[in-house]
Image 1: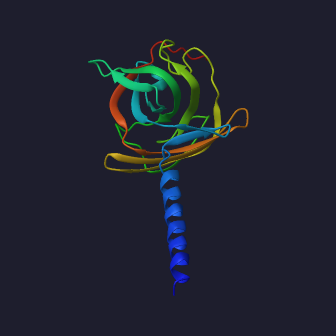
Image 2 (image 1 turned 30 degrees about the vertical axis):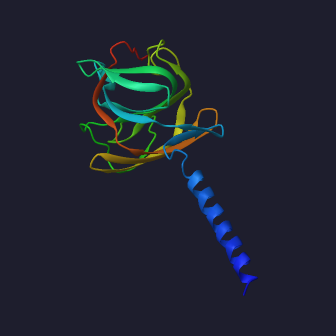
Image 3 (image 1 turned 180 degrees about the vertical axis):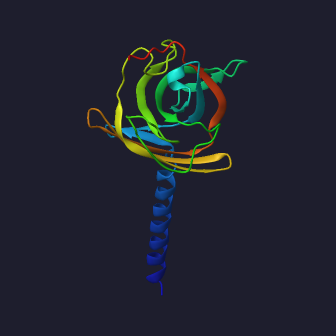
Length: 195
């Protein structure tokens, strides 16, 4: 019987080590986006109304920010992004108020658009508040040409999974499970579109 006890102890120690390793690996953020095999944590997300531009009147932007950035708003609910970090977003056709439609939503680069269609996707791995602008106001950024977002929203929680291809053939994918900051607006009257 004595030889069994040390073997049993070693088996239990081995199982304990495996359990500890599984616990440590799950501590990485489940909210992330990944491009060029680099994983970037998503700390917060917001669903923002775009205002004061007739081209964008039925559009909203779904924004994701990393550590180093934060959402802020003035008394008029106008969105300000503070800090330096990674920023990613989708401009979505939506006439509904503050809710995303459940299901799969695809990039649609050719209007007419349907509820939930993604008009534009963008990201910036070095966003800085001193620039003060969200992508596509002054410069073209990496465009997302194809892909989809899958939405499952229940009450105040939203589960988003996305997978896109950029104009350079890079794959951007990720997921977000959490609440969205809402009731924010972003003034877009400074954006001019070419005819």
